[in-house]
Image (cartoon, rainbow, N blue to C red; front, side):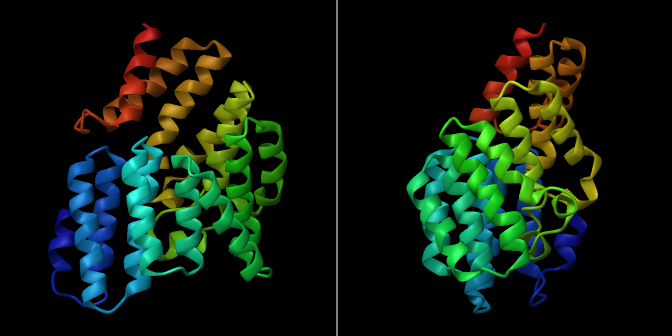
Length: 265
C-alpha cells in the first residue's frame, strides 16, 4: 500500500482514490489518527480536481468507519460534511448507513426515503441499500426479527454482489450480510450470527478494505460467546485484537472488545 500510494503521487484521477483507499486500510486496523489524515487529504485532492461527488463519498466513507467504531460525534461531523458537498445516490446511502449506526435515526430515515423515491428501478438501491438501511432501522428499534425479514430481499444471489458504492469507493460490500449477523446477535441466535460473519471472512476479496473485514472477527467472537463455545470465541477475539495490535487505544469498540475478551479468560 505504501509503495502504491507513493507511485500515485501527482497522478490525476488516481492520487485521491489511492489516498482514500490507504485511509480505509489504516482505519481497518484501528489506526484512526493516520486514517483521518489520509481521508482529509483524499477529500482535498478530489476537491482540487473539481470532483465534489468523489470528495463527498470519501467523507461518507470516513463517517462510516467512525460510526462502526463508536465515535458518534466524529461520524456526524463527517456525515454533515459529505452531504454539504454532494447528495448523489451512493453518498446518500453511506450517509444514511453511518447515521443509523451513529444514532441519528431521523436523518437516516429521511435519506432512506429519498433513495426509495429517486431510484425505484436501481438494482443496488433495491436489493442492497434499502434492505440494509431498513434492517438497521429495525435493529435500532429493538426488532431484530423484522430486520431479518427485511434482509431477505438482499439474500442470495444478491448478497455477494459488489455494490455500486464499493466499486467506486472500496467500501460497502456485504453490508446486508453484516447487518443480518447483527440482527441474529440481537435475537440471541448465536449460531446463525456466526454463519453470517464467517461469510465476510470467507470473501475478503470482495470486502477489500472495508472495516467489516476486521469487525467480523469481533462479531464472530460475540456470536460464539452466545453459543457457549468459549474456545472459538476466544480465538475470534484474538484474531481481532491481533489485527488491531497497533490501533489507537481510545477507540470505543476496541475497549469493548478487550473487556469482553477478558471475561472469557
